[in-house]
Image (cartoon, rainbow, N blue to C red; front, side, top):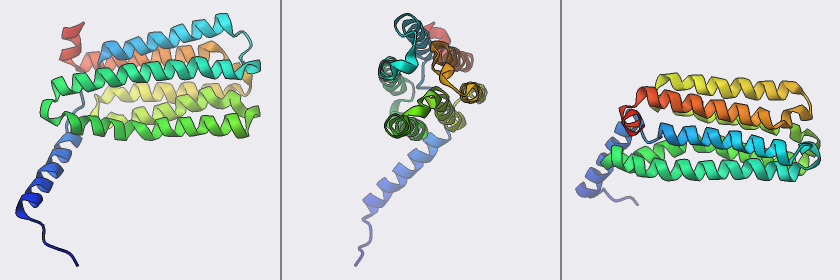
Length: 208
């Protein structure tokens, strides 16, 4: 047996729905160009560390994974913290809806990348050389999914990650585990993202 909604509950529900619709039609400005550029630098430093410490990554795949998973986690935490504080400052009363929208767009690609990694490491270790390419492709899907509420040129960054991922897979062997397949892909890719954000955001130009 269903009961009619109290007028106040209905009004609150309508307001919540309107806020979600407004959030979906508003350009998200919670990502900071300087922070995204910093994660590109992290990728370059991780590549340099791998080149120095791990000349044969195929024989030490555990260490390879530690380098890049650690880099990804540090970058994600930095972006997450900065995005939350920046969104609350710029989007004010819409901050919660905007943050939720950003997470909803990118989380599926992150989850897919993590699950692919687990399956390859545990079930198909002979194909683990494909990881860098698959990481970049799934990341590109997250970028493409986010393009609808970011500046339109952001599609260039998604295209970059898609192409670099396909190139890694086209290598066809452990050459894909070279430090620079990841270092260049994410180093340049995150700088592209930062450049697009800087070009489209007065707040970022003022901060810099």
